[in-house]
Image (cartoon, rainbow, N blue to C red):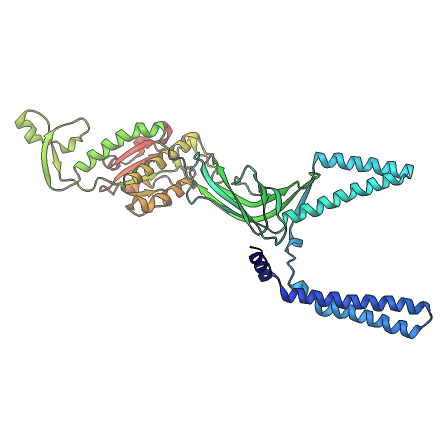
Length: 446
């Protein structure tokens, strides 16, 4: 076991670096001897010998500075000098500095050597605290991983990892917090600190972080802060770790009360629509309240004395277009300033309902299309387009009706696909052709 440890240590040793270091120390030691000899012979009045040895000492020191020091500097990691560390004085630090001030006044006024010694030890404590906390913060790399798909109001587990690259020393008592730059109006991803009590040298420590995003939209994290009060808690020091992390949170898809109310009506409308979309007559049966009047066979009904309905051979009943109309009524026309900000309560409920409907058809493996005034997915398997639709719903915002608001008129030409339309338009303004191939959910009634 000891042999393995020695072998691993020898493999990590920088032999050329240590060789240069030994040469430098040897040369400087010789220069020190020459300088001491020069001082001694100068006192005896041997000027030439003193000057010669002094010149040799300076020459050796200069040779080390020109040849050896650059080689050692190239092998030394100086990244820790570039770390930006912010300092904040804690309550404990205020009390400690107050005690030092009292010691300064007492030592100066009394001239007591014991007080000067206590003062020196107190100041040394501050210096040691600064050095140790700086060491703890250096050589640490942060990695933050989030799930690929995140939904509002549903907790998710992220993973944070801190790696200590220091060759010898561990890190203690680190907290990772979210930092926001000035001018960033998007909400932060990390809102609570994550604590790492101990990270050994050359190892990593991981923490599971539970996150909950209250609203849909864009969340952005400009930077993380690695923070510590180690070792004495006099100062809270934060090292900023820049990051450009941005996520899009999908709307909530857990079925709400409105979804359970809409689903039976929606299923009936789709069944009624697709029952008659084929071209081959399949059978005749008695009329039901959910049937449309255009499928009644009046001749057969007159002959048998009861309403009879024609059934055609069905085509695929799982093809549906989900249409979200973001144009609000004139009296409601207001939009949020940024994606992710909450609009009206009715609009947000409509977005969540549209996401729940799309997710329902994804779960039953339907073929769907999602459309808005500015975006449309192809008609494809729901597994291929569901996250594109949710991404668009995460960013969509209400728009004033005066800008356009008439894109539904173009959809009246397509009578082959059943459409689920969420809109704020008045019923009388909707083209009559759309009523035969669509189910409408009116946002202002949610």
